[in-house]
Length: 405
Image (cartoon, rainbow, N blue to C red):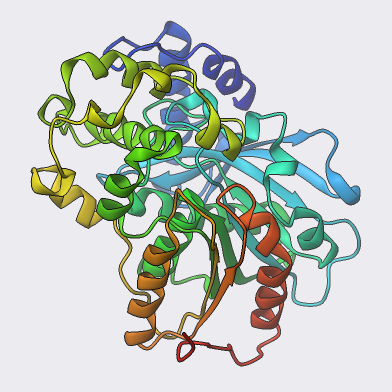
């Protein structure tokens, strides 16, 4: 099943209106078959009666060259779509070597930064998978299982709901459930932390917002985010003077036009539409590509929007508000890292979000790193983030520098 998804993803469509290939239609049918009621599936594939529960592991295949003697798997698991429908999501799960400690291993869910908005852009298909998970070797050395979702629509048929919080958060939570199932009875605790960068920081925050309601069987001990996308309306309009900002705004518009039916023609000049289409159908293998690639995005300039502010035009205003992360339950501690030289996720925006969390009663550890930009903040902050996560697993009181400037 996963091999068929990989092959189909290699030939994704080139335009938002073009029908899926026969291979993708076949894969889509197989994905549906895996989440049909158990009575409709062969006995060897059955899960619990009725529809497979969210987080059910549907398929797994070993991945080669895992670091530090770990076992690595590409997985397919059941999650929940935007309309409450069952969907299949792919990802990677890494299990450290060595004996399982009493009570099982803790889990860290890694939420990846932007890789694209179409199915072949899944990180689990990328050559740089292991290098792209910031702090991976340290997490494995600490004995953590690492669950790295691709998010819906990356590695599986359909459009990726880019920067759609409920979609990302559910996919992260269900990846933890799938990791527990892969680890087997006693192999993993129900305690987990989430660690994400950029888009993944946005996903990490929504994981914290959704955790208790969507996954009460799991215990979230903390949320760690590096340069998270928070105030979307501000970030998108402020970033239009940079190549990276134009890339991300264009991908958001393209994705939301597909998943929400929000018409791009209301906010984008006609000449820019084919450029955005080409950009959306191009993958980003590293976060460097977001900032520096010139490919199809070189034809975009700041005037590719036909409005002065996306937040002035419906339905974009409502969609931006819906997908801007709010505050988290105060019981969930938060670690925020921000590069002071970041020109994509602006430091002032992250600082303002930190202030909102603090006012809402959250315990927030905020780390502003001088001279560091968007590219490297997750790598640079990973040691501090993982020390912070380790203390959460150990039950140490969460620190807070909310009162600091």
